[in-house]
Length: 380
Ligand SMILES: NC(=O)C1=CN([C@@H]2O[C@H](COP(=O)(O)OP(=O)(O)OC[C@H]3O[C@@H](n4cnc5c(N)ncnc54)[C@H](OP(=O)(O)O)[C@@H]3O)[C@@H](O)[C@H]2O)C=CC1
Ligand SMILES: CC(=O)[C@@H](O)[C@H](O)COP(=O)(O)O
Ligand SMILES: [Mn+2]
Image (cartoon, rainbow, N blue to C red):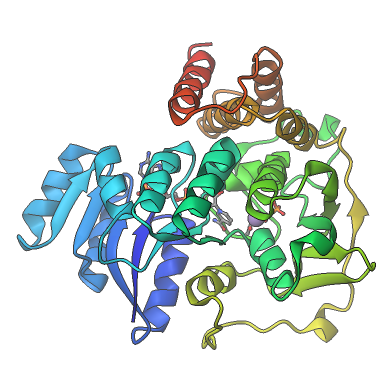
């Protein structure tokens, strides 16, 4: 029985992780969970899975949840609560499915506590990949990718030596606006942007996918997870999201991982690695039905956020922290109807162009810069 501590249980990845636990009750147990503000779903998860430890975002919600449950269930809140979930002493593995840079500190604490981590929370690797991977190496902790592209690369690399990699080829669906020109983007609505062609995901990542920042964040995520320089990471437009990513080796052989677009596959793989469990409710890939797969060269002028991410990654140091914080704030403002879709790019461009990079930033520096960048955008 593998004991799981799940950060971000009420989100898209969190709920699909619960599907996996539900499907294999003899293999997995939920021992701890965190949520943000979705208290209704938190109650449902508690009733079904009976975790020993629950953390929510606010003290007020923690008091409510505590009053409704047995005294043996521990209920915490805020960052301290997240850290407790991340370090739950009973847990064999932590699933980090929280959204955004809030995931960084608990991740570092989990590593310090010697916990293996299945990581969906890509923003943590983007802003502090150097700290996370160094700490994981020193502690002998595994960082298992959940993001579909990184799971694909990880699967392609099994039995292979990283020294033989020629390049990584990360596939991108193109997002909700892939068939629109930049002029067509002028009046797009939040609702249109949230209409991803292939995947059902949380709101923020769906907008990131439409701006192509999601792919930019994934380039940085791949750089840290697989220790690969940016000039060996390529992005390829692939409309169907059937090939989840590829690895080209020096001998020109290319390995790919394929499957229907369903995040439960990479989530389960991270939980069972190096084993694989059968899936009962899975729609199988039928290539004869699909017939044709499409590929296109990436256009970096059309998708400027991807260019910003590559530039920030190559500059390194504190630049990716600013890129990410600006993106998180701008996407939030877009989702709230306060800025237009194209203003997301403008805000990010301004933030990174005025930032003076700090080399090898510490955790404190990263947290401070994250806070300052957001504050300056919200106060505009
Ligand atoms: N969805 C997907 O298919 C994929 C997602 N990812 C990555 O996984 C991560 C999660 O994405 P997704 O599941 O879509 O996001 P969601 O928005 O659906 O879920 C986010 C989760 O984080 C919680 N949360 C948000 N802010 C806070 C906070 N300040 N403190 C504590 N908890 C918080 C939310 O709580 P609540 O809802 O209760 O407020 C929710 O449980 C992201 O980094 C994303 O890029 C990667 C690949 C695919
Ligand atoms: C499911 C997943 O991993 C997402 O990150 C997905 O990749 C988004 O799709 P695109 O960014 O390719 O549109
Ligand atoms: Mn992805």
